[in-house]
Image 1: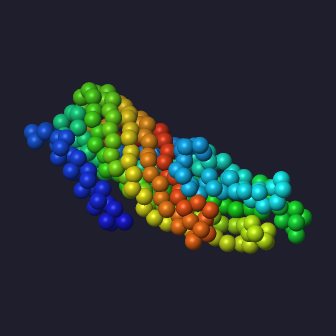
Image 2: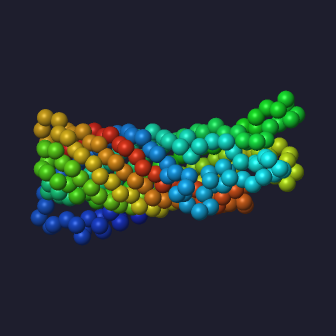
Length: 247
């Protein structure tokens, strides 16, 4: 994890060196907040995505598939985040931030039941935890202490932990077995965003509203790790609300 922080920080300051005039005044600030995250939709996810694979398993006998019954939108989450910002003048700012989100989704086999337990559903829990560490550059309009619209872009290293826990069906034998499959890793991607800062009685405190889109996908290990897909798409959009303090 420390190496990820170092990489993000180095790349951020390289971008900063290109963007910032040498004479700009330096102002530090922190932003803390929370938001809502929407995962990328079913039809646009990366090829080999494990969630798509879980929903589109083939027929195991006529009229019945081994697909799981859940929606991609069920992975909507509510992240929290914090950023350290270094502003240069009124219009350029570099930031290093970290977020956290975790979502558990209940699923079941759509067409298969446990005949040995009075046709009970065969249940699983799918869990996805994401910790994005981002380095970004913002370009702001207006003046510090006033309303400031802004936009920007950067890089992100997303530490992820994905698990499938519960009862599963072997498609070749139709036997039911209990298991837990786990994928961990760090996926590197990009982030773009735009937002508005609104001052609170001066130039020290401000509220922030931001729309952000994260691009990235990780490796699950595929069938060797017990998964139907060898990728997991971590991309999605978020609407974030923050509180900023300058010092």
